[in-house]
Length: 229
Image (tube, rainbow, N blue to C red; front, top):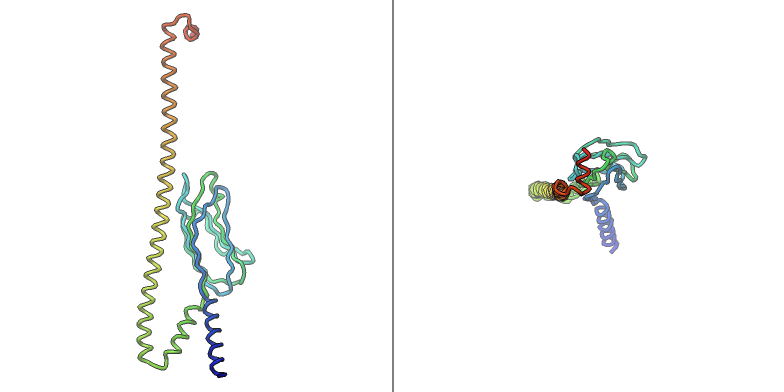
């Protein structure tokens, strides 16, 4: 009975350990106003792996550039990029605490930027620990271990291909959003200039009518005005 209780307790502890080792994955699209910066804070433990990908998908009427920086909990600068359209970084945390990363649009005076980014935080030894524990259980049967290695390699390839497909779909959606924003801004500009030219044509036509009428009305105000020249 005591051995069964110990086995149940051990299973619960292992389950708790693996649940805490799950990676954190966040994907957001943010609007960064001109002359401002948007900052985010993420609690990260020592030795955890940090992976961040970002891309400016719309830059208004200007260039699709933005400044990016990442700081550790004591606010030491780890990454500082100037005027980048996109970036990809992988690094390991050296301090435990709240990491700060910012998208800085102070380089723009009028143009709003739209940035899509993905942040992933995972324990450094998570996959190694899981793989080591599974292999220890399978060492009792060599043939089963060989079969598992083949299956594990095949599943790993499937996982990598799925991740690549997902990233490709995310970037396609980001490009579609950028193209849609460009089309909408172009439509607004064309519509604005069309109305401007239309009103200018009406004004010029009205002015021409007054000038022609003033030639034949010798007692009119416009005739006296032209006669003064």
